[in-house]
Length: 247
Image (cartoon, rainbow, N blue to C red):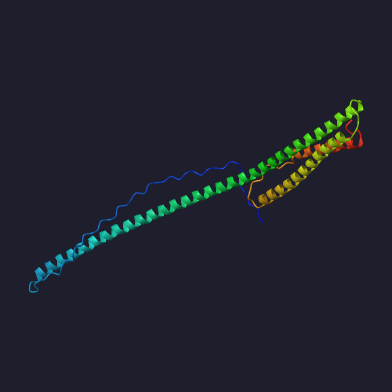
């Protein structure tokens, strides 16, 4: 599948607004008054001179009639030419409107692609915030559990509290283990979700549906959560086996 090339520029240029020119109605040529054809004169053939004059006047009348019709046809032809020019102008105006709509549609598509690309970044940051919430809860459990274990252990070693049961010790270890378990599940969910999000972003970028110029770095929250998970393991090992890993 060929990758769709997009404009490298980040700023979208809004097309100029088309200037609407008022359409002036063209006056229609007036109707020519119907004039009857001059009648054939009734001449006296016995007087050729008078007959010739009558026929000459008849031909003059016919010629004037044809001239009037010719002028009317000329006016109609000019009117048709004006109509054709007007239709051409309207066609060009419709073409400009169509190009303007195409430019607007292209800009809307461009903006939609950029918004979709930014939505992937917002989703990634939302996943980081979710992992931060899990980290806070897990850190609270690990801190409370380790504090309870050290507090009661210090009381027992100082002979202030007689060691009758291991309930405080077990409770502290359980809290730390619960915090580590919660952090493990949170890290696993975050890794799976981010891998699927990266794959979907890469597929949409390859098809030219979104812009992917912005970087997609490794999550610092995931690195911090991994270090906290290691710290929790060291804490529970120190509590359960007295290894002294934390001093």
